Amino acid sequence: QQTYDINQVNELADAVLDRIINDGMSQKEKARAIFNYCKGNIGYINDSVKGNYVRSAYEGLVNKRGDCYVYASTAKVLLTRAGIPNMDIERIPSKTTTHFWNLVDIGDGHGWYHFDTTPRWNHPVMFLWTDAQIKKYSDANSNSHNYDRSKYPEIK
Image (tube, rainbow, N blue to C red; front, side, top):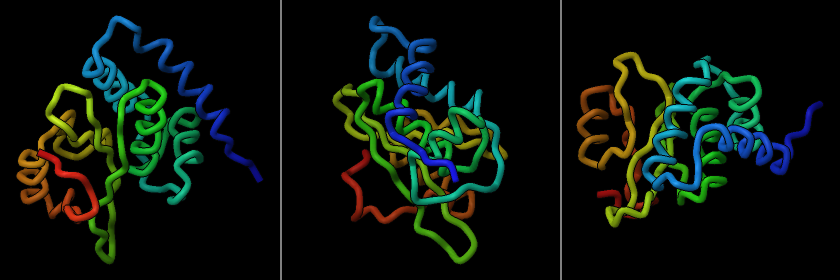
């Protein structure tokens, strides 16, 4: 059985970051490069093992396929290695579905934004979305991003 090592995953992430970001970029530009990398390099399949972000980031970086947990885990490692504060966020699960994405703080004084790289049927670009934006989308799309606001810092 394969083991998944955070040091190995960090090396893989650093190799990606060496190609897509540079020191002259702002935190927002780095976040956008990471967002675009995840959107453009991971193929969606409706399957992954949940609960081990290191394994899921490995899947995203090496096998380049997975579900929302893989997208969020891959983004988490890339954002962390790039020095961008981030946290995991999870939809309130229903009997049939759940959803994972990221929150980011790019240091622009706004605080936390939603950052969701998972592809969706109607192709929204959920890059630095405010809470009002995510709520409007969620309300129109089967509560896709309904989350327990008491578990997270305020997202403006």
